[in-house]
Length: 438
Image 1 (cartoon, rainbow, N blue to C red):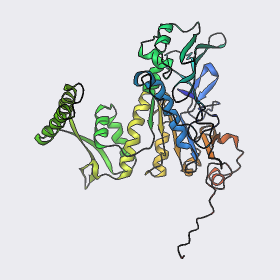
Image 2 (cartoon, helix red, strand yellow):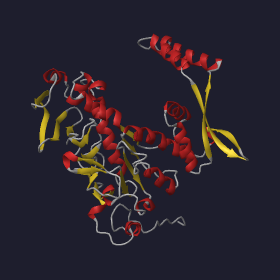
Image 3 (tube, one colour):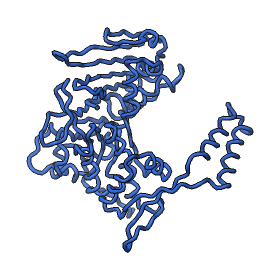
Image 4 (cartoon, rainbow, N blue to C red):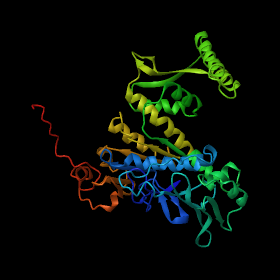
């Protein structure tokens, strides 16, 4: 579970901004206690703000950190530039390092789950600083540094704590200036650190810049899901008119087979692709895979009428786009990031979707939903606690700041306070003026 995330010098986040995903325990709300730090993780957190205030940039920073951990050693070579997006509106940020931090737990099957803190600072071509700490509680709480890494004159130097067991120095020798020690450790099967790397790779799911899922992707996800019947029931409860899901396996026709193989052969012969047999193998693999057609069943005159996926409304497609990864997250207890959750969905549907993460029956494994929205009606329902609502604002210099709603003293209706601009996160507009008579 994710307890904390911090970012500096990323897109509109110039100064360090930190978000906490924990709160004091509340008996009337679902929370997941972490006894090591005497706190409880909230199952859903929302960022609220005006257009271009920086909400999406927060989610983007989280995705960038996950990608840096998972990909930096495997996918970069020694000359590759590290992917980053520093603050562009002052001359100093371009050369200053970007900073990411997070605190998290791993599922260990025991009551005393350790808390890890990972800190990273990096520029375009090197990781300047990397540190991993672990907090445990036996008779008392104690924090140990597992390793600290720095770059000096283009060389990687790593100091190891006594609690880090494994091929530490061998991994340090293999770590490049532009890759994380954590990423290199996982690629070389470091026993203790591979588990942490796997959490980033498997337990961070993102739907940044959400668009409707394609039919092939939806069909594949539904075919692999153990919850097809539950998914059908949820679509029915959403009053979309859908009463069931039907998948049809179809064989590829001769035209598709011939086209696929001719393209593969073109890559081999005309473009002289390296490893020539690979495109042909990929073509054969594609043709051997099932070709699935997704149809949703609608009730009409006492019967069920199947409609092709392309005939469904954008709202139904967007609901599927959100629900499929949500089912996966809820079944595994992972983190799900969604940008603009209210896009193409009715506010009541958004509320119903978020509530999946707020009930112990549908969220028994501690899944977390982190999302952005403009829907103030959702925030005024009392569905989320003030600890779970974060207001995002941007000043005249283009710098974004993030503050929890609990920092504001609100009397009366929250929705009205938001619309009046008393809690931040809303644009200061006094109407548009446009003169077309000239």
